[in-house]
Length: 250
Image (cartoon, rainbow, N blue to C red; front, side, top):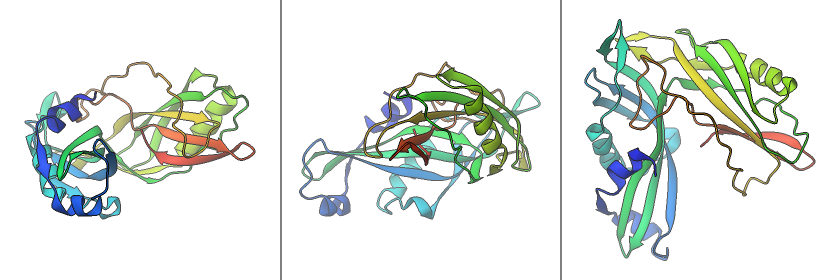
């Protein structure tokens, strides 16, 4: 289990009457997941000082105070500048996990919490799937203080050809980001993006693909348990093998 999820989900039990009203017939054990995204400010001591919920994620208002409280109590990895801890501002992505226990009782926690630059413009790489095996690769690049990918390098991991690597490299080079900030100034961020391509339906789970360990880049702020990857980009080839992107997802 994700250490972030353990640290908060096992620690609190909530009474959420509005959610109970929406899911009065939900069986015990049912799990609901909601996306959580927004800008988070981290102090030099690794504590959250501010969080802006992105309205697009539509997190229910009844959950927002609790999630804010949990973010405030978490111990983040602070950014560093010139070898010293410094305050930072990053784009946070996570999943809110709501587990129905019984009656009106719920466990609420976060999983997959990560910090990084905010993606603004993304073009899904049009990767052809030549076999039934899933294709996995990692694209490493630097998001400049201007929000432009630079030094894009693709690394083959499984069943990826040079053509796959080249198409991914060209697509990522056209992406744009809103950069992270350290000490109130935009900074460059080294990121690694896993890409998984599989021939499957949108309802089926993606095949499990293992990626080599990647530590959080030096100087980057991070959430508890965060590694050096952005959330994986899933591409599902469906209906005559036409690749379609499914956004940033774990």
